[in-house]
Length: 553
Image (cartoon, rainbow, N blue to C red; front, side, top):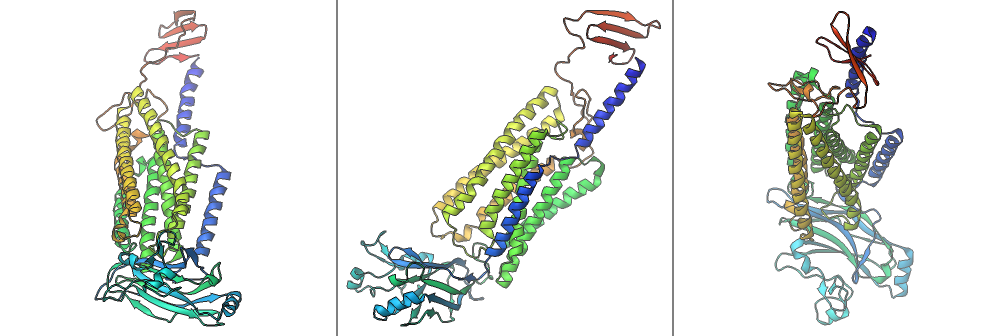
């Protein structure tokens, strides 16, 4: 009996130590899941390195697409800041178009007609000056002059049509012609200066049906520069913004690391994970800043920096969501660790979010040198998986929080309950603000078809960064390392009281099960020295010594 009574505390202490050690092990994904994430990252890396453009608008084999009664190649679209102190311009460098020998032979058969490619540069406010109205054309607007329009004397049939703004010389028009038998039409190396701030677009247009169907390839490049540098106008305000975000992350990191150094013995695993999120946020903000700064100074966007900035942002988002979900489930606070299957599901959801966010970030940022909006269909294809996974995270987080709060209420863990209530309130505010900002973003983009509000467009991604950073600050303030950090760590015994700063938590269950069953037969006796009470039942023998809990023999 004495041997059994002595071994019980040792076994109990061993179980408690093993569970405390399990706090230092975060849930790990399976090996197959890890290989999948690595493969996706390598695929995206290789595609980024192969598909990146320079900051200039480079035309390497692009072809014209049919647009109404014309054939159009989009040469670029950027917000340009004009100033009397610094030049803003578009420079043509070796821009040429090559046609196939078959199309040249067809032109000879047709009387050696001269085919002309026209470059039209216009500001968004002058878009109605490009093209003319003709009811015979689908959509009612024709970029090429039709016979009916020519009869009115408004243009020359078969040529690109535009209307000059009075006294300004805009839109600016350049032309290059395929001479009879020639395979190349080249633009002169010319610089077009901008004296007015605006969103400018360059279109290459031709009206010759013999050059349709991919018969013409573009070569060369145009260099766009505004008075503030080479950054496109919508990106330019993001340079100082990411500089400010880098300083903000540095201040948060200084506070957090100081607390960790001061109370290093009290740091729990969840706080170590928060350290990882802060480090990834610092890396993301700093990488974006240096990427944009290099782009602005040299005119060449560093593809490696852009890729790693996008990757660090996607990774930070995935880790932060997994961390909040693990906390909502009570990992390390209410329970020692997540169960194996649940751990795999959390890790799988995080890996899926990282892959989807990485694809979206790389597609939107790596190689982007234009303020021209990407294809809505392609962007929608990439945005939908991220939105769906975000919805899954939000639902799972709040449902887990509800269960954890109920469990803490039942166990009367007042300090932990208050901490989780603050976390719940912070998440509700963040989700409400996010939903409101999504509504504003959809309205902003749907009502700005021609990018006329380009100077305010940088606010859209900036606010998302601020929302994420604010939530991280709230979590760090609530969960900062302190002398009482370990009071939030999981303890094996629910009836063990956790001492805090002037507060004792009652962790006892509301109903304590007794050692006896209602159907047991039982008998009580006292030891010879009258120091121990012995209880014999059908289910076992129990002893009760003075000042000791009941021990089963």
